[in-house]
Length: 182
Image (cartoon, rainbow, N blue to C red; front, top):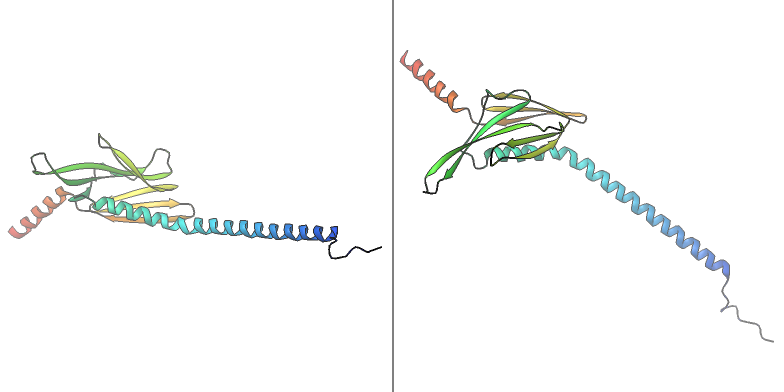
């Protein structure tokens, strides 16, 4: 009688060992993948938060300068809860004549109390959300806006330089003329 060759006979223990190694490799790959994904999400979150304040500063500064001949603060209607400012924009009529259009804007916290926004009322109105925040106070002087922002664990002060109000310029010219005559 012939004995069967050992080459062709597979052992059940060997296939069980192969299965265990394959499962171990799969578990290691999945744990590495999940830890690397968690690392990337934490990295993006930490990296994004500080830049959000800078982004909103640049966005609002560009908004103040864009398409405006003059931007100045309405000191009579501004208070620690909001700043009113006026943008004078050059627009052309149907006849082709240039006309100066004055548009009033308000920098404030929204009604929900968690976002800094700029709004404009009227038929061309709307709002632009700038930044999610916890609290804000405003200070306005002629030619300078101060925005004191409270965020989670941080405080920041943003300064925006704008033009002086036209009435103030006329009064300053009168004072210099009066000083010259004296």
